[in-house]
Amino acid sequence: MTPITVETTPIDGQKPGTSGLRKKTRVFMQPGYLENFVQAIFNGIGGAEGKSFVIGGDGRYFNATAIQTMLKMAAANGAAKVIVGQNGLLSTPAASNLIRQKKTDGGLILSASHNPGGIDEDFGVKYNTSNGGPAPEGITDAIFAETTSLNKYVTVEAPDVDLASIGTTEVAGMAVEVIDPVTDYQALMTTLFDFDKLRALFASGFTMRFDAMHAVTGPYAKAVLEEALGAPAGTVVNAVPLEDFGGGHPDPNPVWAKELMDLMMSDTSPDFGAASDGDGDRNMIVGRGQYVTPSDSLAVLAANAYLAPGYAAGLAGVARSMPTSAASDRVAEKLGIGSFETPTGWKFFGNLLDAGMATICGEESAGTGSNHVREKDGLWAVLLWLNILAERRQSVAEILTDHWGSYGRDYYSRHDYEAIPTDQANALVGSVRERLSVLPGQSFAGLAVTAADEFAYNDPVDGSVSKGQGLRIWFEGGARAVLRLSGTGTEGATLRVYLEQYADQAADHGLDAQVALAGVRAALVELCDMQAHIGRIDPDVMT
Ligand code: VG1
Ligand code: CO
Figure 1 (tube, rainbow, N blue to C red):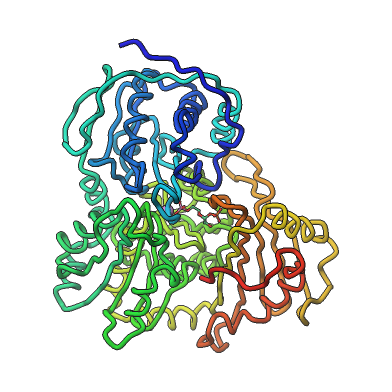
Figure 2: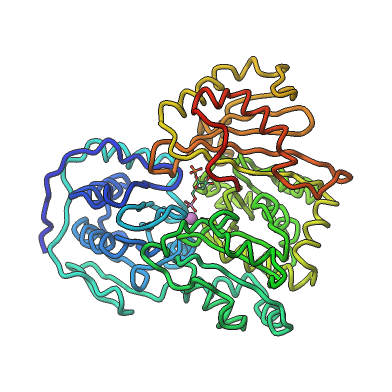
């Protein structure tokens, strides 16, 4: 079948951010908008001729329609084969796994992750390369350059593919294989964790609630936790993916997963609680009466990973994003293994994982993962926690208390200021950037700055340099504040303020985090003259 060429105009605003291109759904639905970006991806990777791809998304509004568009365009661009999740569903880690297992050239993941879904909410598209990971900056730069110059895309006229039926079909000569989205992912999990021990844990009466937040992890969590591991029916709640995620933000943190948090802090709490996000790559971990910050979770997982079969031989190294707390660094130091600090965004872990330099990676935003795929993986983190709990037979609270006793505690919180006018956000960050070199020695709200810089990353594997990755300010007494603008928001700018306060092994570990961080917060607010710049000092979300 001959491809149809459609004339189009370049779109300057299609710049992939932290995690692909993320825009309002209605923006994506404009005629030619999605098509331009998809064509830019195919052009940016040197063409699709003869290649194979994985395509799937988190099931949000426009997911299935966008997949049909992509299938036709892949066929017109000469692709040989596309593997699609049934009903268009694939969690981000499952898509990463499929790219690797099926050895495809790459994959297109449709998701705006933790952002709400619906015609008036958010949509997103991300390209992953053949290692299963998000495209590195060299490729996203090439894709962006294409979006600003391309003046045509190609497609074919063909009937829509029946995404509900498992099996192989074709679009204009290109093979399309619709597969069960869970099977291969679940098989991978059985190679990493002791499923017999986990079954025994549930059989012994261990109780859990997993909140899938009406998003893509529901089918995965049901299959693994309830069907394979024997957790009672009802352990997984909000398990059916909905196009609008039930109207909520599928963001697994104490604010958006409040119902789960309330249960875990109540008298009727189960032993263990967890939640995942829109596309299944994030996790929230909470024990009875005990929330675990993502930074602490990374540290605890790194320290105890050897208890799970997949990591029994030990870890090569631990990597964390720069704003993530230093808790995992101290674990790496004690284990005598590599410790890496990367910019925000999973794509920066790819090279370290491929090179065998890091085994476990994590971000403060509730992303944890390992070298089993090249994305963060929500359910994986839950299973690793369960495997550790099954071996240690202690509560989450006991494990944390024990951890802080050995390593000290990093009190940690992220404060988000959402939908700020972009010029105001830029002015605030710009004014701190200009003063970085003169900050050391100055005091703010009674706290002296000891060092300050703008984070730049030198990739130890390919030598690439990523500049402008966030402003870091260290204060006396083991405190740090980081300022960064979000790369995933779709409205104005989101300013993220990351606060951290170290308390050594002997210190009081029982403080409320916001109380422990009050000093560094006051210093930061004064230092950046927040009230004057954005007209407020209270954040929208504190996690
Ligand atoms: C946020 C998080 C970052 C994460 C990214 C994608 O980015 O802070 O840690 O990698 O989302 O996560 P930003 O630029 O808004 O701070 V996901 O679950 O959307 O793939
Ligand atoms: Co996500």
